[in-house]
Length: 514
Ligand code: BES
Ligand code: ZN
Ligand code: ZN
Image (tube, rainbow, N blue to C red):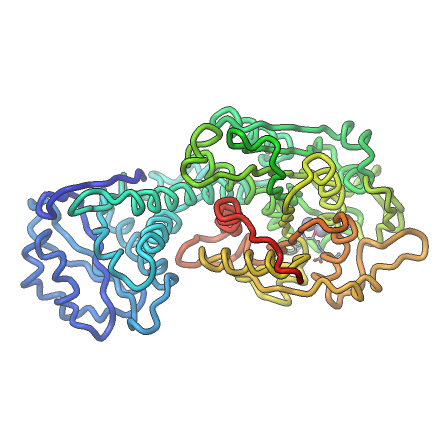
């Protein structure tokens, strides 16, 4: 579905349908009045009477099929007082589902009505556009029997009665690019592990680099082991599939010497648990254990769509951004790591591996040490489908954020929340490290069941340089879900792509001396 812009008097706009937004309890006819130029018949449309404006409600009104805009979908927003941008997202999503159902070829939205909703106009436009795309996602790659793919409109157009406002146009483009990034992430995370292997991810990184001008670095299992990443090595030892440490870089011109924003994403393409084998029920969902790395791919697709190495800076991506992705399977085999084994990490610290299913932290700790040595990040943020305990603590919709300073934690929470990625902060207190003390090594890779999400974060903290600004996002809940939501069908969600985009666009303010 393309994004278009039409400029001119409303009588000249063209589309199979135009969306109109209405609040509950207010005169629907009056709210739709703005569209009467577009569809004069609306004035006398009787079906208006049945539409209440409840949040997520849609009502389809028909004019004569020959006129330029032969139908209107009324989109309910609920009560004005309880309106948030989330209401708008769900409302647009419901309307687009309707467009899919009715096989409407082209969809228009009057920018004026979006800009007139409560809140910031550009934000409403960005959220409306991203929410038009997201619900239409499907994963079709391995379907051979579906006669035709699910219908998707060929374009969505924003109607401007006067000159095209460049701020609103840019906001719309951001929404479109974010959706493209999220679609890539969903494809990679939904992709089965026999397709999405570490070497497949390398290929993806190289494709992004070739298309958008990024630079890529890649290390094989021999190189990772030779570099001294004993913790990472302990995870891929039981796998036949070759592992990779990938790095992808976006560097706007003149920023080569700047300290970058570095994202480190867990890329376990399949997590069997290793010798500490997982139970077989739902084990297939563990193809999604590369959701952290997947979100980084989505971010780079978004930056690419916004102009890539050559042009994204003028769209606001003015910071140097690097994604580091340790990618491997976690498999049981004759060569696999045994519980009780002790390994030496790249940092020199030794780890007693009590449970081979706590593998994410083992690949991340070495990747973080490597990232700090190679790139000296201004801020480092790792993200990972790290612990089942996080689902127990926060449920399926919310991710945990940990950070070395309040400003960073607050930035993730608010910037993420603004785009619908919800985070709740958990503590990084050193007392939790008590659980990780080992009798034979510097630390164990697991503590008890209690506080499992925090223990994992404390483990990672041992690998963060003194004074380095670092945040850890545990996205185990929201990255992949076995239930539908308005903006996302079953499976991979693309969670965190937009959070990373927000951090890349707006940066992170300096800590306020806490
Ligand atoms: N990949 C899992 C975490 C996970 C669980 C992600 C459910 C998404 C949904 C991780 O590698 C893991 O297995 N963690 C263990 C840690 C435990 C052994 C300390 C867990 O959460 O059970
Ligand atoms: Zn695991
Ligand atoms: Zn895992």
